[in-house]
Length: 218
Image (cartoon, rainbow, N blue to C red; front, side):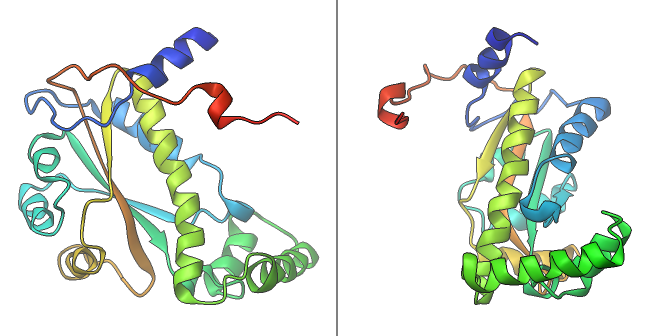
């Protein structure tokens, strides 16, 4: 793609409030969107995310009660994604997940794994002071948001609309995750939701501050 085509996709993307319920994203296109999330970068490459695609109408109804920012999206979106993030039991530097990940996913030899473990320990304890559960979850959520941004941009590049959603009650939504979706909420929390589909109304012209207001060169 040319630079102009890429920027056109950024101009095309907007927070779509309502989708055409009669238009569905193809399996191939949505797998492409999910693949851009899977390939996203994360701190230390630890991939602290999990994505739940909610297509069941009853589950969508359950989510609506606590997602005040999502009713129209839940009713009309072709695909609806819950962005989950790993909590302390998985994200602490000495967790079984991180140790297994370095061995079986990143394929680090023993001496490299031990060195990286010490480095991640230092990072969490002093460099970024991730000393409590909330700080650690928020840090991991920052990585999950990278995947969200990549999904929305990739969708826009192929003419698919999206809407990122934080308008929900986090604690009560996690109760639904636990009770209806069999998610271990001791290990995973919800960071955001994203709706995907096709717009029914053209958005207003995009507004942004000028470049000089957002970038400083020294």
